[in-house]
Image (cartoon, helix red, strand yellow):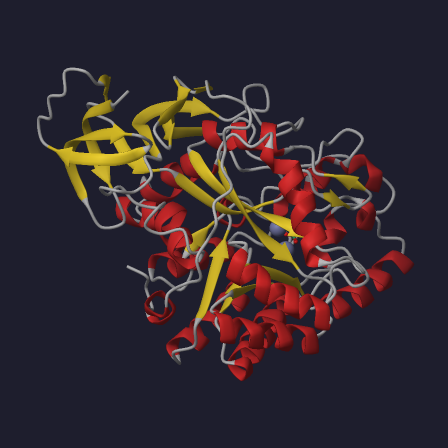
Length: 469
Ligand code: URP
Ligand code: ZN
Ligand code: ZN
């Protein structure tokens, strides 16, 4: 059956007009004024915005980490994503030390295939870069639709890789068009700082932030960019949190280096005072990089506005406060790192970004959907509203107010970082490949309907386009 969405205000990264959209066989078939298709199922979107479905390129569902596993699996996490207007996620498959990359990929395909409710892809976290994994990387890029890899300068002994491995992977990326995503924090120095604080008996959650200074992040970003330049490859900095790191990105981009970077809502709306909450509450905000002083937020908004930061992703990595965060009651280093957010991204950024005039409506779409699609090889199948694109569409009510709360969210976690915050702007209806999967804010789709999307490599044109417009 065809679906006709009538009278919505269609917003893409560059358009803003009112028209009707005809959906047929999961794709956008026709866009025009006063379309009259008598056999179609009609949805009225008068006074509403129509956005392309959100694309969250940084989630960790069902991820073993910190002695436990993230509390959302591919079912609960993607239902929450859908309810928040995200129709595609790119999650992280992990190669544990000694494992082949294909084992990692197979494991994550198994986790997702029968559960995911929105479309998905994976980045591969590479922790063991030997000759075999380099060969596998090439094969995976060419045949398996995985075109991005994450490497860590942090978490020594767990995910950390040395600079030689990073250089090798970036050289391969340079040859193949793939993209290396970098967790850029100097984990070796951070570990020393942590030991100093623990030796002095400082064990509470706020020391997570104190022991991970902004300089450690800026140094990591600087080094990642330098290695990328030597390997002549682009690089994508994940979860950038502070002005010092942003400065490094800006300087490099000013010199024409192909560096892309994302930030996350937690760095735009929360700050390090959350670690001073009573008792053990600060553990809810133990995520990495940590929350920074409020003064960083304005700089990050400027970075987004001027195009030095191209993506807002969530780094959704939830752990329940009870029993999971509590693993670190007596030692902040044992608190599993990460926080929930996949469901709240669009409303938070609309309310705190568009309505406050930090970014325009078109930039909102660019940062949450179009740029991630372009950078990670999903465009134009995803990330825009155009004839022939997947009918991944959100009907968004720009004046509806609601209060964010763990009592009403769909994420499988017992707290919300934004508990009690009233926001204006709500996702009402969501289409994923033409299926109306969210109606009046609740999930209606089948379990496991999400499809794995094979991604392309970024085009040379996108690589060289400074603003990605
Ligand atoms: O605290 C975080 N960010 N947890 C997830 C792992 C990572 O580094 O992205
Ligand atoms: Zn990371
Ligand atoms: Zn992450």
